[in-house]
Image 1 (cartoon, rainbow, N blue to C red):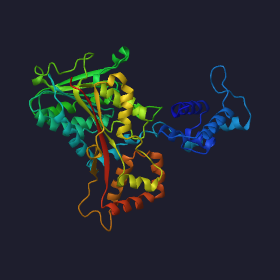
Image 2 (cartoon, one colour):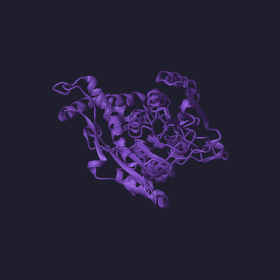
Image 3 (cartoon, helix red, strand yellow):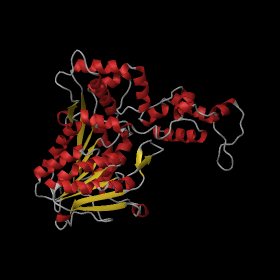
Image 4 (cartoon, helix red, strand yellow):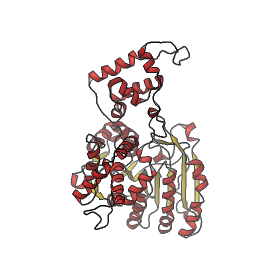
Length: 465
């Protein structure tokens, strides 16, 4: 039995008995984090597996004819299985949301660290290697976030291809992020008028094509076009701001009870372009049910959780994006690498923590295997470390790191470290309560004279011929 099958069996048992997974882990093998470790790729011995199986068999809840837990069973083991979990153990999906969905920590990280700027510079280098074909330069951003990377890449695109039409598609499920992205677009549409901007909340397997495979589900996709009138950034901003009602109604999310992450309640596609360039963009504007992929550049920057399973990263994100490449197209992937002062802070609090489970070599190897024959015309480029790895820093004033370090700097550094490591709220609450994080952060900043992080990148390209 592999870990995926085991965690499915444990989840089914917990639903059947009403136990929290942490309670199950403690009662079965005295490990409240058993399920979390398995989801993050952890392994167990055959002895532990036997103990898990024995616990489930000894405490199995009998079902009545309707499939509900039966009332019979007076043994001690049965009462233990049916006993309600303590209130502290009952964690709702809303409380178990993914760390990356915490807006305050995300925005603080973006404002205090240079990652977005450095990633945009790395992505812009790929523009020299693409050879767009009519009718447009086609770019897909697989996780727009607040739009900082995309905005900078669009500037670089205008610099390199000032007269070519652009077709830019961004995937983002967060309503707050979509608002931030749209705030940055009026200036882009003013400087480069011949472009079509598309935002969608469709899943990775559908977003590049702007359609769902299931015809019935696809018919429920909300498709909205906004031709912008006028010729100034101010006029464009007024009309884009008018989308607030549309976004509030159609860009809502709920919580996936399986993962605790956010998912879109209603699939939507938003298409924006300048009315005065509609004629020129006629072959670029996507039509419902007829949109194509074929992207010259795909940006996959932090598009999957570092702690996610390898097959989740590959099957759910990287492989579909590779399929969306045009001949000569390039997919650049970027994710956190570790081996930096940021990880040192985390390790001082959680010595055994290993958030960066899979490096670029493992991801490319698994993607190639996943694609099989579909990947015959793809080239998988891991590159040497001196090209694949890059560093970004936390902004500090020139004399801010010295004999004394301000509490605001320490808090920003701690936030950046645990954000990059994607430490979940449950562990953070305990660490903050105990207070060791302050000393750990201060010591690391003093030892290194600042704080920086490492990302690593890889490229998947499709042959031109």
